[in-house]
Length: 348
Ligand SMILES: [Zn+2]
Image (cartoon, rainbow, N blue to C red):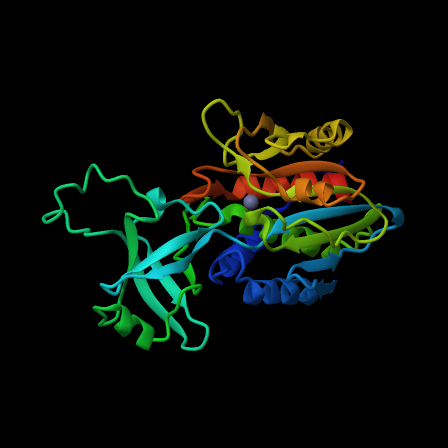
């Protein structure tokens, strides 16, 4: 395979990822993000449709319709929901997905009301002034010990209700996107918006290079992945294989870095299809994609949901390395480029 020059596509991936990160989409509140995703694939010249559940199915063309390949990435993220309006006018939250108060503390938030627009606030420890609270250091950060302080003149439950805020309102945490000169991408929710950006990069590559993939190729940009059922259903007819494109794990005991593409051999759901892992490794070798094979100790993927919902498929999982997952995450444009390279080798 000839050497691929993917700089233009990697630039595009970083731009698209940043744009998508600017649209709040905690799991259960993904309509705007999904509409954006649909429009971006359409702009590249592909047919995209919304599923009833709110995901986006994209037809990336391809020849062998009886042996289709489905790529899955998710646009839903972690977040919060108003659980209780406290008598002092603060909000107690419940988590959406695996949002963790230990790394959410002091983050700016947006509270999305059903009928009265959006209000700003900060997620803080209860009684957060260190000069006042003697237990500041020793308090375990939980959804009960932390609260949203609204940036509104409110001192009681009634004041908050008058704003139109109610139990069940969505709370979005600021992603804080930064792309450094050295190519690092830092943000909350790179899981899995970076992969959505990568699939857009793949679509652009297919279109501009007038490629017809060997096999019918589809993308499903799922919602509800963070609560486990994103990949259930909506498998296009003729698909015999599904690959999750989701964040690759980086941490102690694993070999992947943020600059590589990770191929997952096994996670909490068990081993991935042996021939698929092998073929993904071969595609990485053929394209010169810098890759690592790892086992993820605490991880479940969309494609496992696809299998558990009753589909007969071979399955795999790849993704750019992401450090500090479900916190303030970090990846690198090389990780995105290596993932794209591997996908081009595997799909095109
Ligand atoms: Zn994910």
